Image (cartoon, rainbow, N blue to C red; front, top):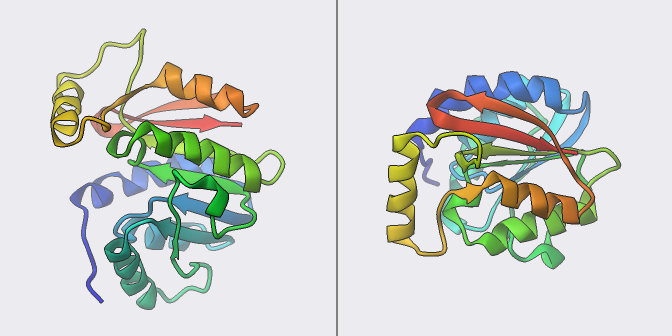
Length: 197
């Protein structure tokens, strides 16, 4: 099995983990949506050994990469990766989660995947479980960094259904599922972590 590598993972994992430490429950299951290479899953499972970290992805190559990293992981709190398409919330292979974590998916997928993320989460979230999102956003009252504007242009050029989302639109979607944005954390490289509860 081939391990994939995402350079940004090593750059942002410590900063993300520092925020997760204050937002995740003390114990339980964290469902990671769109785990990608699996590097984050291994790192966060090791950082939070009292939590069962459950990786997922819709892509077979990503699942193989996650499994390869998991094979070298010495702990027992990293679940076997499962195929999960956020845009198909009726068929998630996970029944319950105490937190949902999603990193860098919302802008690299059609909006329907974000709708599905909240719809699926509403079905499996334990009472009080947060939805924690990481990535770049457009904010109405915050100037957008030139690098993020360029990134947005490159995404929409690759796929017109992709692109940076307005955080207000995500807030509105969350409200349709009874959630409000509980916190906003500015992160390196013009990214944010936003938490809905």
